[in-house]
Image (cartoon, rainbow, N blue to C red):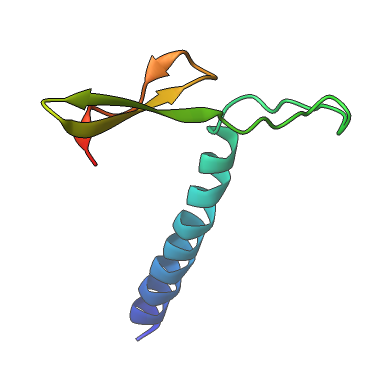
Length: 78
């Protein structure tokens, strides 16, 4: 009976220690932390514009990223 209680307690303590160690390991494995003053952080929204063209008398449009200088979509019929 004492052996059974010992095994149950040992198993529960081992399970508890295993569960507690997982979050601690993942916190340290996330990478570098960068500290900056709030004045240094500037958020810019991406600027886009629709470009239109007429093909065979039908209107098409395509989204252009002004910020990145690249097309964001394929030509689509309007």
